[in-house]
Length: 400
Ligand SMILES: [Zn+2]
Ligand SMILES: [Zn+2]
Image 1 (tube, rainbow, N blue to C red):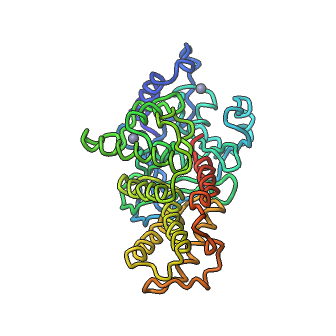
Image 2: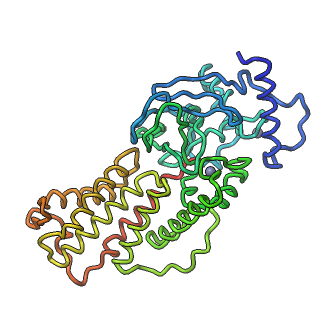
Image 3: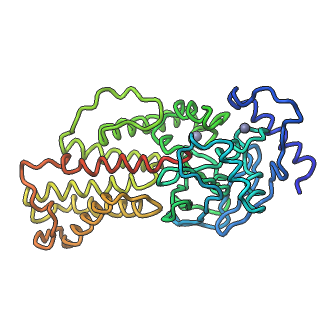
């Protein structure tokens, strides 16, 4: 049971939260309409195999590693306790009440003690929407433990959909030591936004942050400038590479799209994107791995077009480095589109046909890519891959 002091603290925090809530929800309520479910504001520590969920000073609950964890370990699976197979905007308070009545007593308790984004509000929506993730086939599910992870603009975890339709998994993206806080991107797009743009998004009605105080948002001004510049350039590069700006964030002034880029320009944009992403410590999901694989795809294309029999040492070294990066980023916890899988297979096949000294055994490389001519265009070949990328980025939008 929480002590008197903690209860008072929880009430205070809830009162503070309503101050920042949108005006539509902070309409006048008499004190006896304010509803505290039993266990509300509970600060009990919950332990799992790799982490624990516990209260932290000034931040509410968070998840912390309890043992060293290697990058790309999947550390947790969670089943939705309440699922709706429709758009989140279509889920009504009545739907929520009806679904709530069907929960087991244990799940009811879990539901009632989740964070409520409406503060002291008695509605089910405040609880549900603060702890909701989008599902792969559309629809929304409620994941009480996954939602305990706090947001960071440079997250060390990703939460994505498991093979099961309404199951989420947490995958660690970086090596972690005990005590490290587990974080994820509430919105993946924050990876390509400046500090100012992120604050604007995260303090909007949908998220209700007072401000983001993550490790990137609290950098000293000079470092913040570097981080902002990297993210801004990455956003521009993505726009040029993929042909579309980020979804569901205010559009940046990116100017008219130049159309298909010359092959060499496209490849160098991708290379620059990879370097900036690694330097900034962002880009979760399959995008970075896929980008490294595309660089190798470009080498294969050029080599086939020029009928190269042996890769120069420098290029062959690059290919091997890029392949390590592609596998590192591309295989862990990612939603790989089937066309991405084709890309990875093509690249792997090619590498198996290259001898240690860079000599290419073209006969063994049974791939249509072998047949390209001087008139072929890599960017045209990549077009289906590019639209797949956009689809993947759609899929990966989390938290609504
Ligand atoms: Zn409410
Ligand atoms: Zn931040």
